[in-house]
Amino acid sequence: MPNGDASYWNLINEKFDTITDGLIERVDEIGDGRSTPALEDIKIGSGRKMRAATLFFDIKGFTKRTNSADIDKLKESLFLLNCVIPMVMKIIYDFGGYIEKNTGDGIMAIMGAEDSDSDSANNAIDSALAIFYTLKHLVNPYLESKNITKVDARIGIDLGTLLISRIGLPTGTSKHKRNFLTAVGPSSNLACKIEGMAGTNEIWTGDLIKSNSRENIQQHFVKKTPTDWTWSYNTSNKIYDIWYFNAVRTEPK
Picture 1 (cartoon, rainbow, N blue to C red):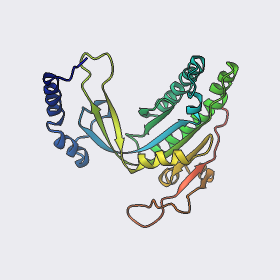
Picture 2: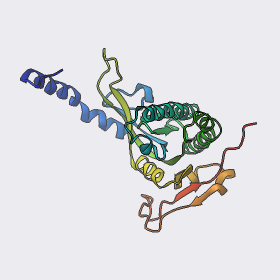
Picture 3: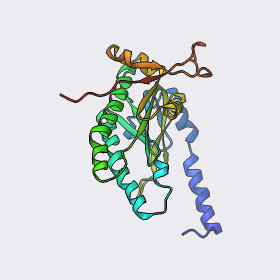
Picture 4: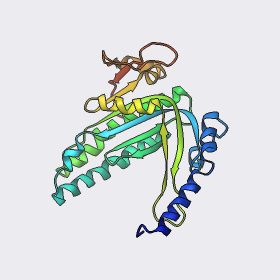
């Protein structure tokens, strides 16, 4: 363990110099569109600008399951997470998504990084429907067979321009991953906010998800824009509406 002496802090200073060397130029390249690597090829300190859907998934009430020091209850919570989160990740990957963040009881995913707005929106909606179908018909029956209370969740989705960058340190000989992709942009912030507004086992979306979704599902969008909502389109004063998507995945044929 580092002991905080002068030699250690000299190493810290050297590492910071290495991290910041050329950082301004690398970040500038993202906004200028001069660097457009695939997600897996983005190097530390660099990134890319893209249009994509952002999907937030969250298990409702998970904190209450872990507020006891009882080891059996904590094991039960870990068992639940290992049933739910890998299945959600599997579905996200199957619909062309990338897991940007795993918060333990939730996931942030980027959908359609290489696709059109329409494909991004529809893949995000379809993956959300598949997630809730899987929870209802596969995961929850299994949990209840183990005497574990079923999982409730919520999903928020929005679409827009993101800056995606790889942040962290080179892995080198480390046993653990030391860098990750992170996305910043108004649409990712809004997707998180929308997810927090969604009710139990509900899918809520931003206006661009609705407007880019298939015509045959438009009737399933119910406007939920709050009366005091202040988000608007950048190009006009038109309010950026929020929608509850009330469709349910039917049994596969």
